Image (tube, rainbow, N blue to C red):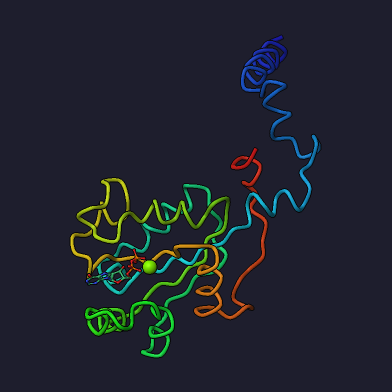
Length: 192
Ligand code: IDP
Ligand code: MG
């Protein structure tokens, strides 16, 4: 008798947590699966995010990773690296003539950087928003630069500024074999 009552109570409470039918439809794997090309267009954009030596030294790597993870972006590649002069000349090829470039290069070679590729819908433009403005004093609070730094020459992170440059930067900093093609189990909870 007691067991039956307990079972009935469990059935009612379990039902209270059951998803509504429309909710079920929106996430069901069997309901109208999207085509591979639709998923490609929505979710396969990649951006190159790099934590600069000051971000690594100051122990901000975990916080930055956490922001991209909790946003819903997918980590495709990650490593630490000591950047060479040649690599930085290529990466910052549009800035090599700037008067501040020698200092920028020294700063970027002063310790390890943390190189990452994040993937997801509009990852490039959204990644830039998450970083904040180049000059940290102009970055909104809530952005990475707005929360963690003060000077443009110590602005702790890099993010690609266009899809074209993202693809170039990913190819510059990573071997093809370092990019892992995997499917997130959360994708149907992040994309509708
Ligand atoms: P971004 O990193 O926001 O894309 P860029 O203009 O591409 O900004 O500059 C690359 C990096 O060069 C900046 O993140 C910053 O570290 C450095 N930088 C840019 N402008 C200056 C400057 O006027 N003085 C010193 N460093 C600068
Ligand atoms: Mg730039």
